[in-house]
Amino acid sequence: MPHILIVEDEAIIRSALRRLLERNQYQVSEAGSVQEARDSYSIPGFDLVISDLRLPGAPGTELIRLAEGTPVLIMTSYASLRSAVDSMKMGAMDYIAKPFDHDEMLQAVARILSERRRTPAEAASGGPAAQAPAPAEGEIGIIGSCPAMRDLFGKIRKVAPTDSTVLIQGESGTGKELVARALHNLSKRAKAPLISVNCAAIPETLIESELFGHEKGAFTGAIAGRTGLVEAADGGTLFLDEIGELPLEAQARLLRVLQEGEIRRVGSVQSQKVDVRLIAATHRDLKGLSKIGQFREDLFYRLNVISLKLPALREREGDVLEIARAFLKRQSRRMERGEMHFSPEAERAICQYAWPGNVRELENAIERAVILCEGLSIPADLLGIDIELEGLEDEDFAEHPGPDVDTSHEPTEDLSLEDYFQHFVLEHQDHMTETELARKLGISRKCLWERRQRLGIPRRKSSAPSSS
Image (cartoon, rainbow, N blue to C red; front, side, top):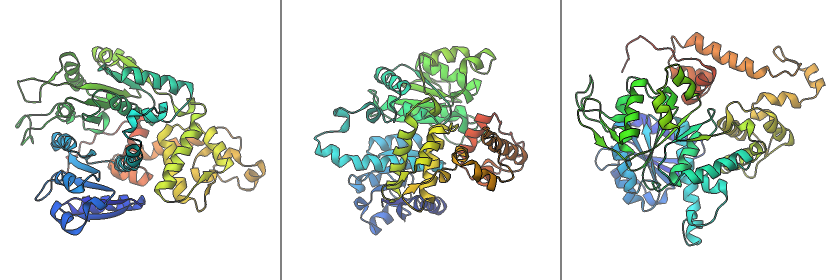
């Protein structure tokens, strides 16, 4: 079981992160400062160190030296993101911005630990894995061998070494950020930062400040200057996910970055040059939006220099089972469950189900099944997908029809679940926060947002004053 050290001076954040990691089968120790960590533990003995950047006494970057090769993940607020990028240049493995999504943190931890496990093998072979020949999916970091994905891999290899702007299109959950990361990792900017921004996750009133920075006094509450995310990506790659949600004012500023290679902070009269490679992603039809005035047409054509289409999981032929088995292997190893496998009925359900939430839905279903499974063979019912009903015999339906079961086997189950979600959100969003809605539905805030996008349920703009 991997052993992780958390160094965070805010007790609430530290305890919440500890509970999150322990629920996911990690052993956790904690400290409130660099000095406390140094006095209490042998820091190089951990598998991973997660530290806040700003701590009482020495900064979190001091742990990079003390860890002696153990990977360090830096946590930081957007306000100090420039410092986080600098910490990567000092040797930090990665950084994550506060407030972070639980899934985002778990993915970062799993990725770093996976890379750490590969290091001894690479050293034994005499060099890094990038210098050795590797299959397409291993080199690019995406599983898949269907014709559509092989074509995509070929385009990624051609496009990655250039500085051309790339627009990645595909449904939510298909892995657009993985494509962006592959483009960055295979580019000449691979050693520079990759800054990922979800445009829909930042409030509209703050998006320009977050992207382009602001000067002290630029607006009420701007008590100090701030480096924007575009500036933080200088020399590297900026990935703008869900760019279709970007307000028109911010689109005009972004167009200037693409045309002139410069930015101007909010409240500043001076521009400054930036060297940034832009990768954008969306599940929306930007060309259609530009025709109705919801997206700038000139920006669309600037973004659409190279367009990569990521197919939905249901369009990827035989890839579904290959991806499912890879997820199962990863989850069973992480939870120390031995060599788990799918039952024949589970494999049939995986192949027949449409996976409207794509790869993300598949990964979540398998993680849930591994947690709930009592043996080594995963039955179909633990996947929690509606197609499982089709694997039952007719007499099973006759004996246990249930009040809401449609015995005609028409694909109405997905619709009823989505109807329930839509009804619940519309009924409660006036008096519940996004966090409360997600908790009641048993999903993450990120998943709630994605389902809103897929079903076209706008987030109700509250007129109540902010408590913060």
